[in-house]
Image (cartoon, rainbow, N blue to C red):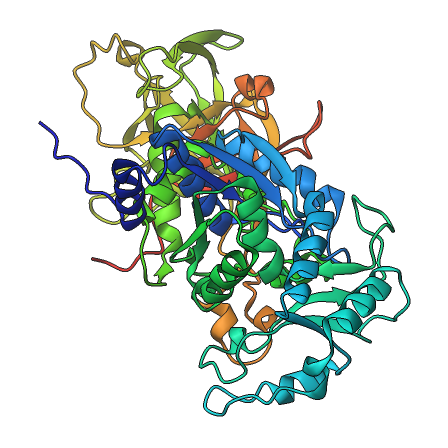
Length: 550
């Protein structure tokens, strides 16, 4: 009997809330800002919010935090929706913070009327100076003494577009001596004359994230608002706004964000990589974006498994990229179609095989899948093997092909190398081998045992393919924490393009297919492919070549 898995701390809170009757059901939300593509860190939040709702019979809202019109775009909105659906989740409702602009404005008016907010004419530099430091209290300026009537008029004038960007802000009136800097009269509204991707030019004032977030949760009656640890200092303001506005008491809970080594997880930094063309786009297979991982061949199952294995913690840590690769390897081993592909070919002529004859050998598509079916491999007198699988003067215990040596060809026959034919310059032109007819895979009666098995392709039917071998985008574990520009640490060998020769069934490859090129790694068809050009991306190697020995 398997041991029951222990609950994480958020599950414990939810179960206690449901048991006590505090909530009859749970409602979570995933609130991305549409200012970039989602990355692997977001996948953890997606899996957590949607997963909790599924586990406890609740629902999850998708809410776009579109309060900053300068950086947001409809392209990002659509990509986010695509990524969530690809991961296997569906939201109960699709909302936008901009849906609530009128209501949020009224909330700010309510705070002004209660004497809990005011219009400030100070510059951002003056406000920062007046706030003090973590060890010295802030000092409230003269604008905090404005009357309710004056503040209401000024706020209405801000909305009417009478002031320029930065001329005025609205600040909550809380406590300039608070040890929490976020509570020292935080800005809750600012002026931005910018076109919004949904509301157009209807607004020129926009709520700050800290003001929009909690109130949006409350409007939707979110029961458990789950954020990452950096929002812990923001929670008192979240609670203060809800309390003073006397609205539905959503509660915020924090967990550790996902930090992955050998990459960066900041949308601002990822945007730099895209804009400065260090990568081909947001979906470049080296990017940690969900769309990049998808293009590289990762599966939603592997990413959900990764999020589950990382777990829900209260302390930030750096997760090894090799764990993500382990998860995709585990899944691809079960589902990937096996194919024979030779990268660096050397011709083998099987001298005792009938000239002009081609036979079709039958082999499994995936030995791990009982329903995977069979496919045919053409076999004839001339084949290609990897040049690395032949050595003229091999060391002891060399089990690949060498003069006089025998190997098995995968799903075919045992062959013996009889002669090495060379070019005038001394390089190898081709190998002349003989095959043992009785050694056919599946019906071997030869009695001969060999220790080496090689992959190969039939020379006459080989399909030329382009193979893109991807590696870590950065050459240091934590590029964001290194001195200087993080882009100085980009791995110059993060992409290598090689030519390959594949068995003819590769022509049937579809974008959704996943492949194991035998003895090479796991691959998928890239979107740049065409009917006459096949391009494959390496998802991951067959074995972990990065992790330190345990």
